[in-house]
Image (cartoon, rainbow over all chains, first blue to last red; front, side, top):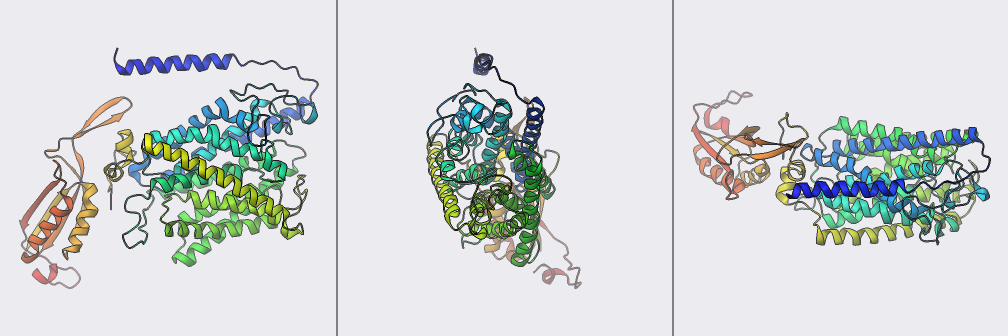
Length: 467
Length: 113
């Protein structure tokens, strides 16, 4: 029996095995009377929002492909495609349980595997009995909760892909993504959204500036530091040698798709329709922050670079969206404009800052997701207005609430950052020592498409591999 | 006056450009080309079918030089492009009859420099 055949057989057996587990999971639960119309409406909204967030995979794939060189396009597209599969499997197997299962302040312990815990969704509050009481505030079926959280978890893993692009080995990225979504993301997520110690402390992150974006950013930062810059990015004298993306059309398409997807990401995090006012409020703060960030990023790039750089304008939009992700339901629309304005300048400065440190981030993922994830989380402590959409956040510094909320937000940023950075560093380090992390210099120059996948993205076009 | 035509591996272009600059040669025309020599080819995968790729990506450099720059140019190209493997490339040197600068109408040695 040759080796290929053996691999096929083992893959088939694995599929049978997991299939068996799936069928064994039919826990029946009898629900007392529920308002079907309301549950149906809420579920519909949560699912549509989740589908929008799923669409963000396309956005990430296009932004990252557009902002990198054509010789690496197959590799980046493959990474962005497979990362959703990896995230789905790992979040289903254990991630969801670790994040939302009842447990200690640090980790979920009940219903760990395969969403297997007892559950009486869509009952809410005290009527809910089951393993995932951290999500009992929303009256939708368990699988709707799971699917909505799953697309968020996948987003965190996608962020890493862009920062390590054009030089990382394909299988090393896959292994890291699996560990990130199976273990690291759910642990810090449990602290904040799973009823853990940060939630108990009064830390607020509405849709995930910290839970999703900073976590992805910290994991990426650890990876980039261990991986090193792309060959030729920094000259011997320390100055930066720009490596242009190959298709600004794709990058723009991706940024618009991400913006569109964000209307699921933020407004969807209400996870209920209610009277609709919260959804409308969040949609407006989200959009306001994005447009102000575009304006200020354009101005900043115009002043610094003498010409308005499209890649900076696109990064500006994403920066505004990341920054408003935590505060979108807790701040007024004018505050969202202020947050967006700062985010746009911040992202442009961050790109220069990381280049100064020789931290090579081909698509600006760190400047967008890490820097603005941190800023957005802290912004809750500055601009929060108690009960603006119903959440009892207390007032932020600028609304007369003093420093207490800001300090809690700062604690959360530091704790999540510290944990994720150190854990990621260790995992990346183990991967580096065992599987290897970086492709050979020759493969990097020829392109990862030929090296990792044996195919080209544009076989009918002729272009320079290097300039 | 000579025209030097070099066909090299695409990934060595940066190295060759650098060594030419060090030798004081900064004027060149570079085109992306495909071709085959002793190197043979490589295999590419597409939907499970392995294809033999025969014509490989190359970079073609053309440099017009005066006599005293022929040797330095050749040495610089070799220095930048050589790995010792099959496929490093070839350099052709051909005599050049005339050279005219379009802007000024200068001809010959002045037009090259």
